[in-house]
Image 1 (tube, rainbow, N blue to C red):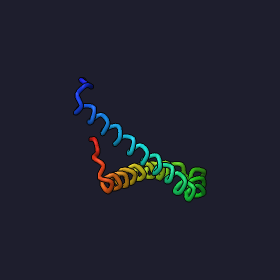
Image 2 (cartoon, rainbow, N blue to C red):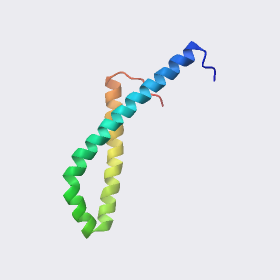
Image 3 (cartoon, rainbow, N blue to C red):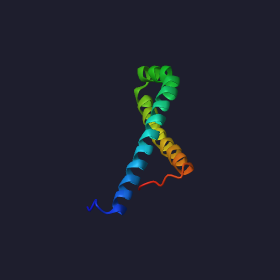
Image 4 (cartoon, helix red, strand yellow):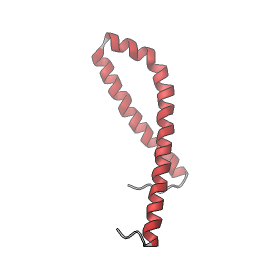
Length: 88
């Protein structure tokens, strides 16, 4: 890859800027999810783990999938509002 080309340098800078914004946004959202959702569900999940492990596993998987979908949706929404071009 020729990094002396100004167009390549601009593309690389844009990619790193977008990546930095996305990672920062993901970090904030994951910490917020952890603090809010897991604290609210801590007692329920603990009791469910002790009483019905299969249901706990299914609920845990559902929470992970839901977190991923919501995280992607919220991040895409915010990046679109900020008019940040996403790199696919």
